Picture 1: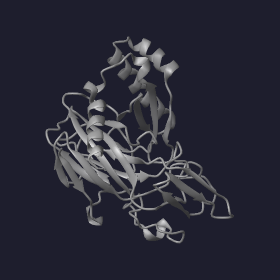
Picture 2: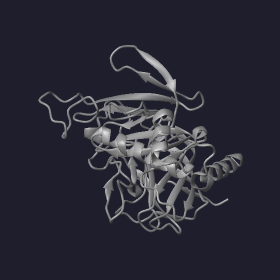
Picture 3: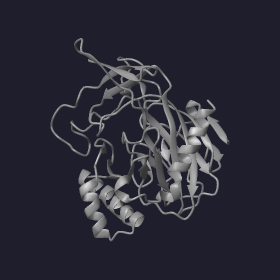
Length: 336
């Protein structure tokens, strides 16, 4: 098994998709063991560490990478299977920001009202018990919630030689912030440049749909990813697959356009997988689909369109890449 381990130094972290050389070259079929920092670069370590004081814009939301995939060319699809995502520390952090989040004025939704207070919440992470503990800042209220690790940010270099901030989700991936991107999921990304140049970051111990306050339970992660390249397969927007569902994403503003993009991609994808007429696929998705929210706080919002594979009568999704990568991941885990 081709296993590549990579732990970036602080100076190695990237803050854009595109515009940076690869840190490593990997072959399809490789399994990558990666360390990713939290969205604050590990600088927020207590309630007194306000991000505006300890972090420097635009150096937020770092990603590990980019990685050059051998043989990847524009028009191909990169498949990344998340074998495991585990917290690297026994603590995590969440915050509110002035002028950031779904329930406050922002620079694009300007209102005459005071900004929200900047505040920090620390979470205790118990990986053995699979819990995170929320504690109110004012009062004695506390509650345990299930640990549900995910990555908010994954993507490839955009087309047309663009460099995009890692906080922005779009057709290349980026900061989609969907809780659907957990271990056991394969994400499909259209390749825009030679080598694809993918990167991963923004680990969350858990996140509610929408990431309403603008941050999740932000954490450094030890993540294992299996890599495959699907030649000649075009993927217009990031897609996800788990054992039971296929999922399409869309990122835009306003939110209804993100919704439309994700649903459009799922309908056309369903039609191509089943041979259905497009209107028949539209009807099937309309009655069988779900629409989990990714984020409603970033520079673009993200929606997910989700359909059980049971409704598709056993489709061959990307040549069964998910099943192959899952088997590779299971083989890796059996050796650990």
